[in-house]
Structure formats: structure tokens, C-alpha cells
Length: 274
Image (cartoon, rainbow, N blue to C red; front, side, top):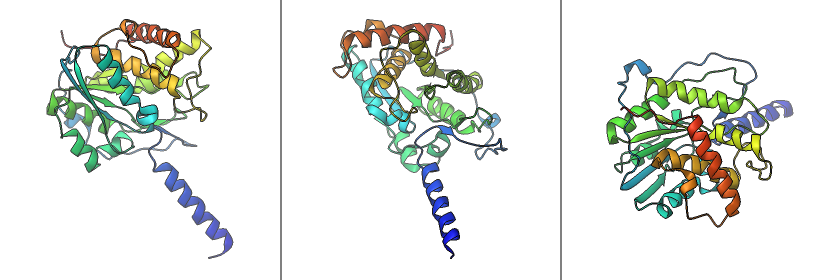
């Protein structure tokens, strides 16, 4: 090969590697392109009612997602919040792989973990979304996960509606709406994480939420996210938490708790059948 051809081959290899890592749920594209669903149409899925597993005596929670789920040991933060602030027992497990939901549905390791226990909650993160908000990617896999969660375990599916990228004023609403549209058709909880981040930044300035890349959470951001999930999963107010993390200033945690509760009032996550 000529030097120019070899350079193109190397660049293509790097692009393939970076796009295959499952590190973010946001897909970058320059121009809108048609996207063909690769999973069975959602019309073939039976839409089951949303189980209410708040106030469980034994929480068994599975997290399925990518680096936004695994960063700063987020599932462990949620586990500790429940353990230290309730009389319930709790076990939290994260699927081993980091991938989009459309990839997890084909991963045997994820499916094995999903079927390994009787879960009370399955937290679903990494529906592929468009960074330019110009492309809508298929949501069939997310819908399949919701219905599998309910039909297999009678568990509560909880969508982890991701925080926005730093400086993006419209992304939280865009992402939340994508998950909400899925939940309208296939009932699931939608944790308003992005809205909580927006609410915090609109009122407070003292704490940074993002890591240096402007995409992932730092420990502060992960704690705010965990509080939102804590309230959605347990039905308990974050402000009632008595045991605090040693990794974050206690006063800041109290501010985060207020933001979490206010956001969960503004954007109710779960529409349980009456």
C-alpha cells in the first residue's frame, strides 16, 4: 500500500474502535441518515402494566448501560443510599458489559445476568440518541427490555434519562422526551436525571457536576444522579436521608437532595396503575 492508503486504513481502524466502545449513549453524526430498526417491531410486544416495587422489603436492582452507569461506581452509591437509610435489604448488580441497550439485548453475558435472579428493579440506560438531535434512533430494544423486565420478573423498569453534555441547554429535555415516549407506549419509570442537573445549574454554581470531558459525571454529578434514582426506586424523599456520603460535603449533599425531590415532583417518574 502507498503511505496515503495506509494512513486511511489506520484512521478507519481508530474510528471503528472508538465507536464500538459503548462509552456514551450519544451518537455523533454530521448529516441525518435513515436508520433501520434491527429488532422486531414494538407492535409485536404485549404492553404490560407497570409494577410498583417501591417500599420493597428486599431490593434486587440490576443496572444495564454503559459508562454513564459504571462511572464513579454509581450503582454502589445507589446501593449504599438504600442500605443506610432504610430497613430493607438490597443487592445491586451491574451488567458486566458497557454498551447501548440495542447491543445489550444481543449480549449473552447481559442476558445471563438478567435471568440469574428475581429482580425488583431494572435500571436501563444507553438508548442511543443523537448528539445533534437530528436523528431518531430505533427504540425497539429499549421497549423489549421494558417488557422483558415486567414479564420475566414482575420488576419495575426504570429508564435512566441521562444528564446533558456540559453547555447544552436543550439536551436534557430532548433525552427525557425520548424515554418518555417509550414509556407512554410501554409503561416504565423515567428518572428525570437530566432535568435535575439542569435545575441544579440554574440555581447553584458552587459545585461542578461534569468530569473534564464535559460528558461524563464527576463524583458530584454521580451523587445527584444517585439521589434521583434512590427516590424513584424507593418512593422515599431524598431530603429524608440521614446517612451521608463521606466523599462529598454534607451541606452539598443536602442541596442535591432538595434538587432531587423538587425535580421528582416536577417530573413524576412512575405512573403506577391505581
